[in-house]
Image 1 (cartoon, rainbow, N blue to C red):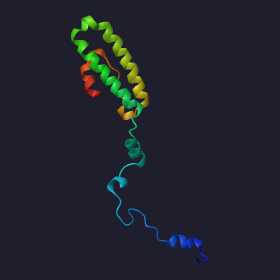
Image 2: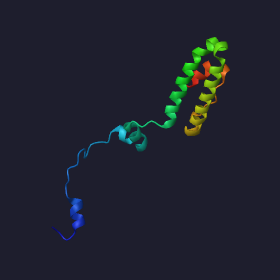
Image 3: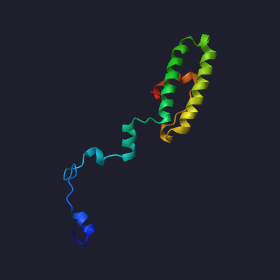
Image 4: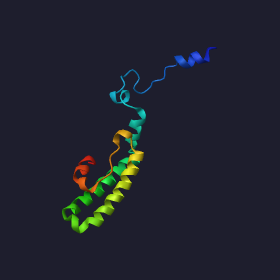
Length: 114
């Protein structure tokens, strides 16, 4: 052992797994946090809201065929969906925000939520 203990530590050969091999493309691309979150299976809350809105719109769509019979139910359901849309818009990234649902345009808006 020499008097330079730091130099001894640096010069010590410690075999490391993967030493001298190139890094994988996966490690070099993208954001580390995004990759870690994705691998952990995390799903942001607004993604769950998006799925809820899509499912509720799918339930309203068949009711539109007999709109005269189900008008109150459709109106109530659309109001509840719009509450979810407002919550979705407040939590999602700005480019992902969507307009409120209107009864007259449900089939077209259903396509936007898919």
